Amino acid sequence: MFQNAERPRGRPRSFDERDALEKATRVFRSKGYDGATIDDLVAGMGVGRPSLYAVFGDKRTIFLRALRAYAEAKGARAAKALFSPTTLRDSLVGFMRHAVESATEEGSAPGCLLVCVAPLVDDAEVRQFLQDAVAAGMALVERRFYDAISAGEVPSDFPVSARASQVLDLSRGLTMRAQMGMPRKTLLKDAEEAADLVLLPRR
Amino acid sequence: MFQNAERPRGRPRSFDERDALEKATRVFRSKGYDGATIDDLVAGMGVGRPSLYAVFGDKRTIFLRALRAYAEAKGARAAKALFSPTTLRDSLVGFMRHAVESATEEGSAPGCLLVCVAPLVDDAEVRQFLQDAVAAGMALVERRFYDAISAGEVPSDFPVSARASQVLDLSRGLTMRAQMGMPRKTLLKDAEEAADLVLLPRR
DNA sequence: AGCATTTTGAAACATTTAGTTCTAAATTCC
DNA sequence: GGAATTTAGAACTAAATGTTTCAAAATGCT
Image (cartoon, rainbow over all chains, first blue to last red):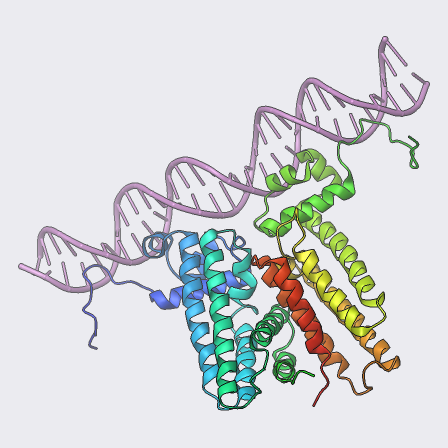
């Protein structure tokens, strides 16, 4: 086998960095930040304790890295769900469905690192990151609404920012219900109804 | 001063049990369950360590008691907000406003013990309690919608259970934004818009 | 083959945390 | 006023948790 990056000198690692971070995400999702111990991370990531500190840093740093990777991946998928379909309704349904599917994916505890776990972390950097992520989410949904206005799909007086907040609030609600164990099927149906709701015309 | 319950024999307590539980709620709200240490509770509740164990039990028991008291109080206020007004819109606005006000009350960290903290607690009894509480909330809102149908305020084909889910999801979203530091004023305005949204007629 | 380099696993270390115990203090009952 | 009873505060113990150290192992380079 050829290696695209030339192999480093010493003993090769027994783990993949991306994969380990994803496993860390699983640990944090199921136990929360304070509830996850280093032992949990060592066991869940398949990385030895010293390697963990050498490669990822301390618990706080691991969480921040996991959070950033998680947010980036989820943000990209959300944007795709939002901007690939042609109709606004399909976009919104896709966006909400994605929230539900992500929050109920198998192999991970139900819920969302961004919505259910990170807000409880008592750390200024995490808080700032979250606020930025939420603002970015709002901007994404608002842009989709403006696109729909341009396309004449909704009237030009459509209350963009109010409805965008509502889309995000409804998604958060769906995500939290997922965390509480509500079945995916129910939530997917509710996601569709939520999309229909935010598309209703004002009286 | 008269005492309605005859005074017990030994040294009198230096704390009020209800008040101490409420202070425990504040501690859990700001630090989360796993993040709150016994020392935090001792400091925050104004109860000495041995008294804490003697009167309240261990951390898990304290949390369960705080959670029950919190849910009871919040449920009562929510029901009042929902069933006191005459118009459905006033009821829904009141319900959502209450969620926002409770989540942004001064003297406590923003957020909600039921919505933001308890779902992360890895305990079967807590999970069960939460599920019951959510079901009770749903039932409350649904009943208010049925009352409105009886009163002829909304059509008889009003999608009660879908809209009730959405009311709760939107409230959860508002609560979570409160926890993330969004100002009360913004959220109160959004609460009104959310109430208007769920009252829109189907097309 | 031997040396330099990096990772690994076990163990060690220091700190924090949960829970208990012991003594002093505050109260009621006699 | 003194005995009995309950609470409060400080000190203590044992376990857990976060972090580092160290020798051994696995690789590339010469």
